[in-house]
Amino acid sequence: MFDSVHNFWIQFNDPLEGRVNFMYLDQKGWVSTGIGNKIDETAEADSAPSPAERDKSLAEAREFHWLLDSDNSDATADQVAADWDNVKGHLDLAAQGHNAFKPLTQLHLDNDEIDRNVFVKLDQMESVLLSQSEFSDFANWPANAQLATLSMCWALGPTLKGFPMFRTAVANHDWNGAADQCHFTPDEGTIQIRNKLDRENFQLAQLVADQGQPVDQIAVQLSDVFDVQGALLTLGSKPGPGRQDGADGPTTQAAVRAFQTANGLDPNGRFDDPDTLSALSSQLAGAGFNVVSA
Image (cartoon, rainbow, N blue to C red; front, side, top):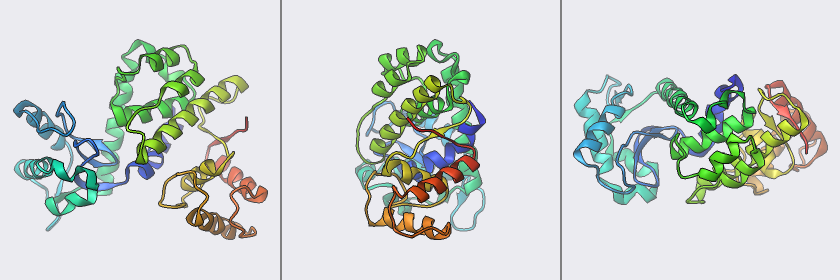
């Protein structure tokens, strides 16, 4: 993958997955941690593991450097197993979100360990992709197509076997076709946002290819409030709940006003203010992004 994708990866995923330093169950009842790092080899969602699945899951969990909450000392293998079993044993809490599991755990990860494992997983996913014929020239795809494909893999796993039409589209470098075929379910919550981001990034990849733009830079646009929210997140602001939702509500307007004030602009809170868009564009370009228009 291009350096631009690698360097942007945590910024891209953090607002979607959140940064959780303990074990919890995701929406499908799989033990996870970090920034959406699944550490669960149970085949069926919302199910107890077989002994073999549990053993494989614990082996993955023990690849992390876990610390005891009580004194920050290194956790033992048995303590890692105890946390994993305790979390997995509460499938009834999965729908309540990660905070429901904090009282059930005694271990945590520090931020450096979270980041380390994010990039380990990212590199592993790329290796699996490159081993499949449809993705053999992945290294030469536009950065946005790389980003969107890896985003799908982060949520679904790196084989993407359930997406034959998507696989055909990317093999043919039909990025608009990939945009039409990248949607996955359940289309709710942060998955809904990820679906929209993936679709937009494939469409941007097509625009980059059609216009002969540099393929190694991540292209961005500022065409609507969803894009402006993404730009603010990329530049360190947090509109709304800290993620893109496409709603021009009071929290987004407050984030826009904060950006405008910090940059000596009229703090009118309008996401489509020309001076604000110009300042956002300039700062995105300075951060290595390719600001494009249709």
